[in-house]
Image (cartoon, rainbow, N blue to C red; front, side, top):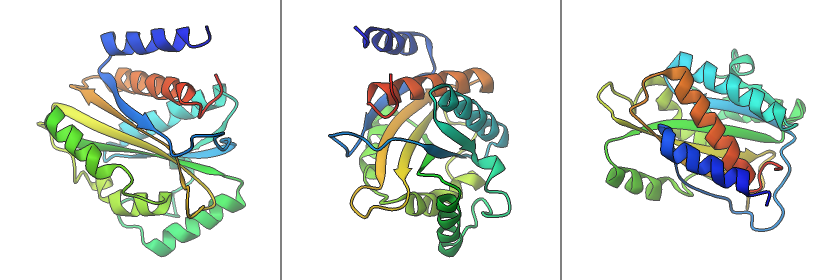
Length: 209
């Protein structure tokens, strides 16, 4: 019976929201590592979107008894968005471990033009990155708007949660894809996106129900 509220929430989001789940997966089939302290990084050139997204998701994690921190309060002075080197990322990971983080959430906004393009992009993205550092380094151009233009009707988002320190076999804890259709109001879009993301994390056993 505990699954009924989650099922109803998915029906609601599908019917009423611009945020739609495409799919999600986790390489862990048995018990998943517990998220104890997580850094939230939203990769987008839209500063207002990034700050609102990170702050709202931070609050939702805390509601679920997970210590969460928005990157806007951590990365300043440590990483230059879109210009970070591998050494800087190594230093950042060391700093995060020293501060007690055991996970990092990386959420990317990637522009696509159609569902056909979306499926193709998912096929190319899945399993492409072995760790938080490789994912961030390869996609940091997003901060400069390399994948965004004003004519897009669909925005695809990919959210990945990586464990720290790196386990060479299983860094990726969870990955999900959500697309946003014709997002017009930032606050409403972020609310729908975060609510759907949290619901899916519970459904997939990453967060307790």
